[in-house]
Image 1 (tube, helix red, strand yellow):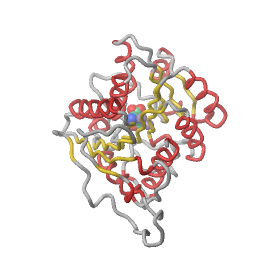
Image 2 (tube, protein in one colour):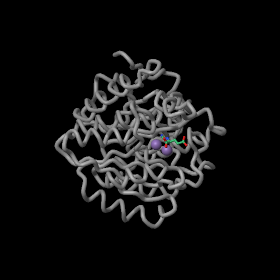
Image 3 (tube, helix red, strand yellow):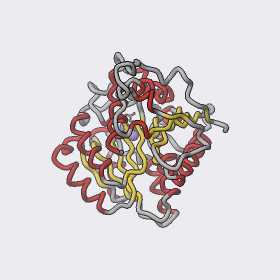
Image 4 (cartoon, helix red, strand yellow):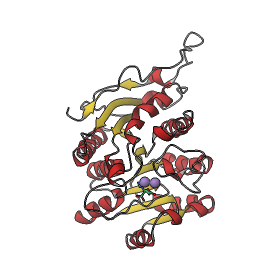
Length: 312
Ligand SMILES: N=CN[C@@H](CCC(=O)O)C(=O)O
Ligand SMILES: [Mn+2]
Ligand SMILES: [Mn+2]
């Protein structure tokens, strides 16, 4: 398949404790690998989207294209508990030069095929241009259902632009829903008023976006979540790692000035996982160039670990 490659065998490696006990296993030992064009009937499809062409177009700091394999490596050595033996690594979609739209179409098609086959999708981006591709795949897979998009992000990513960037995915998904006469159900939690212009804020109001600001997160996130979940059949959760405080997550293109700590985000993520409606998750904007001693990768991998555990 063009624009696709399997994960190299040296990525899924770690410590071997298996002589201590049969269940002393780590994730690299319980994970399966298969080709992207051969989805299974259940479980979690882990797909990499090795792309920062959208970040580049959005004048951001590139480097997110290196994220998928760095995140896989950080996940590999974590202990394998319930849910982790459900993960199948289906390799990585790549982008050729500035051919972002072709890579996004490849990801959308792969996501739709995995979902229609019975798998849920966990995508390691990539810049937030990942979300136009992942979200479109989910909307296409569930064309008769109400799909709620939950974005944990300092940014609204509702920019107007002639072509796709990392700042436009939710505007693109809104237009896609409008073309199909579907309701655009978008909630952005942890958003920073200081990191979004009034024009973007006005666009969010026009599109009836549910907003929970970083300042109000502790008080408002769970009640707001309950409301939006009640009106949805399926949920697509996209986690832009710049929602975290820069001290916890320096490894992003646009670090947050304030941010929402992981320990505040996790109860919200837990509720989403337990809703029974969660179909798709991605972690985006991780940029290894700016990591410190692998701490950012470890935190991002722990979020993925926790989601796979709760999802089960
Ligand atoms: N993915 C989105 N990124 C932000 C970047 C903001 C910045 O560079 O400061 C956005 O477009 O709003
Ligand atoms: Mn974003
Ligand atoms: Mn962001």
